[in-house]
Length: 313
Image (cartoon, rainbow, N blue to C red; front, side, top):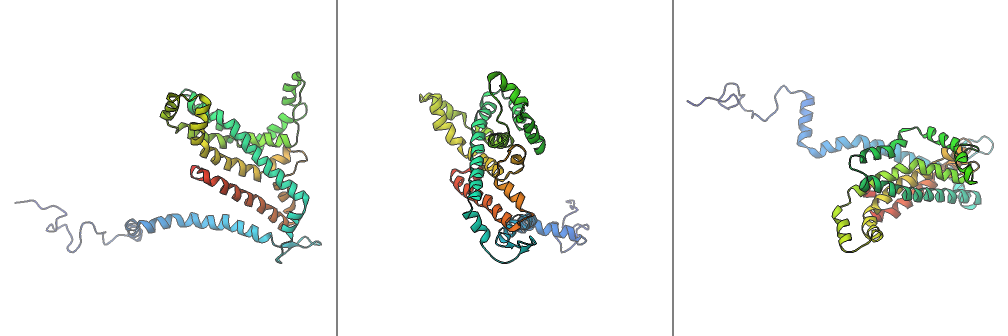
């Protein structure tokens, strides 16, 4: 005689009218909800993404909408209170005032200069860590390059303030050559911003160089290409998206920075400084100034979209 399985329909332990795969009658609401979500993957995905997407819409896009809306308000000249009357006077002032145009152009130029310097410095560093250094040392070198990110922002900027000060370490090092440090000003601002955002350019370039197929380099050498030709025709096209991806970080971070220029910039003014100084005095004008970096970054993102950089972020 064949033994009955405990789950067999003929077994006394099996409940009539219910398959072994059906949930127990005494299952709680949490277990029933879990079973329902398991059978509906789209509902499960929607439940997981609803909270972060809602937070993104309310906290980020909502704040941008409030910023853009308040830029069309005005301020009472006597009480400095915000008057919620629709007007385009703030944007007209930005376009007509030569001071604001100069500050905007200076800010964009500094952001582009910092991005170019970061790319020039990051590429040889990343190439050494990814292709030249011993494989055992590569993780340590990458950690060493990223170590500046572990220190506080203000700590690094004030350290550079001491380095660039008159009679500071940089002056002491250049004095035997008859030179002196740049002091505080535009050059110091570009130098410090380059130091701050360099790791954001090194990391994507290092990753792209690590993923560069070795057989492409060998094929270029077998075809008679010299080192510079291999770099221009093989390496640079493969790494260009990573450079563009890193430039998104360096450009946007430099464009919105205002603390560095206050500490080491001397009398140099950027968009962030004007926004910070007008927040308490003329909030609608500060909001109009705040829309300028947003518009510039959007244009920059559209410009680098063709290179595939957004897929490398």
